[in-house]
Image (cartoon, rainbow, N blue to C red; front, side, top):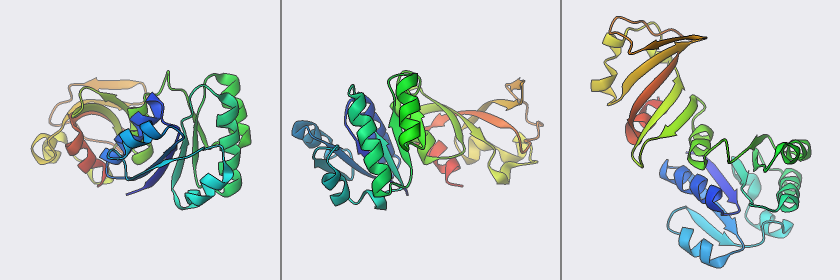
Length: 215
């Protein structure tokens, strides 16, 4: 389990926070809107009403104790830049910041953001999954319970055939395709051997996919 603090609860921030919590992580959210905080209190580990641009509020929340801090502030670029600077000064371990445009992204990177994301390109749910699991390369939510993901190959699957792995029975997922460089093997056969550099396109329930990522 990892720990995350989400600063700002617009649509994007809520999506990231809820998904991270559903994936079994420790999640703290901070927003100055008390109604928003109340509505999120049962969806995360901790919810605090406060001004995220206030250095004292951030220090009181123990920012340095969290693995990842996510600056999800909405339309105020100055505030998001200020919060990123404060997080860096306080000693945030890994800072992810939401950008509105390329210029905003450049500034965020220069003032201390370790990763900059664009909501138009990165849905909150996708970002959450990528943060939790380093072997998830891409993520498409089909429904609240089922997803398609591109993942790197688990070590114990390397040099084994799909027949040996029997993933449908053992893991409850299906391998839709195998990618290696520019080559894509759609609907691979049982005798196909998984290689270390392969990327697997899998489909299944979020619960079953999570079990694979924990291996």
